[in-house]
Image 1 (cartoon, rainbow, N blue to C red):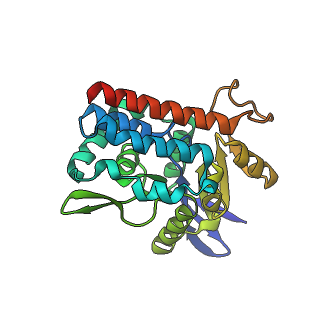
Image 2: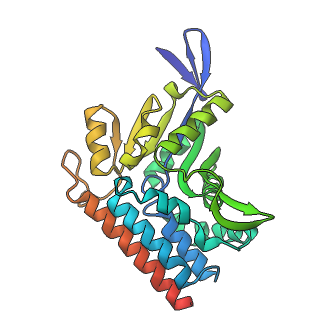
Image 3: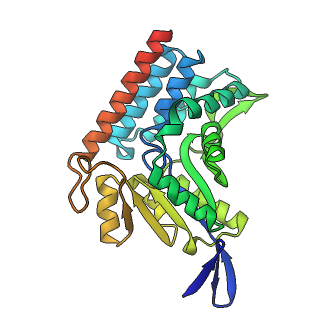
Length: 272
């Protein structure tokens, strides 16, 4: 046993530093952040209907069929085609507007309270997401978090190439990046926390001593119950009742993703 003060746990005569790691979509933000990014990009004329449609449909297929479908490589290869040739500085400005216009009121109050509690306790709090780093950094900064780990778009002389510099930060790669960060910053993962809604993040959740399922999908809820992990659910009782299975969760994810993609393409069409 140990005592915890200001983000440092004193255990067996030594002081350890810990952190909390938060997934983004459906954990910290209601819905898909890329959906709102697409809204901002089309609203500011950075992309057109044709440029966003292919990306949106890939995201739908991936969310519906998952990694087992063999679609991850395709998503990773083409994830940032729609920003190819655009300036990084412009994307950064648009991401600021996306937060103000679309995301600020989509933050789950309960999850934000958890992040703020960790910060007040002196812990480092990191956003860990497959979203582009430009958007992740804006969200982290606006919420006062320590920083963000996210997908890194490749850029040459301030212009996007359309490729990713490294892996798409998803699944096992999230865990690998968090483990690297912990080594670099001297964080004790056994005393750290991780929060996610998706079974795709089991590698990350399993990496820390305190995993928490937030608004969990069916597979994660089942795993969390089996391993006696903490579960918090901020959705309405109509959508997820404590102690009852979330009927049709996979279908619901697919429907939401499809709706988001359709809306993104519709908005793009209005501005194309």
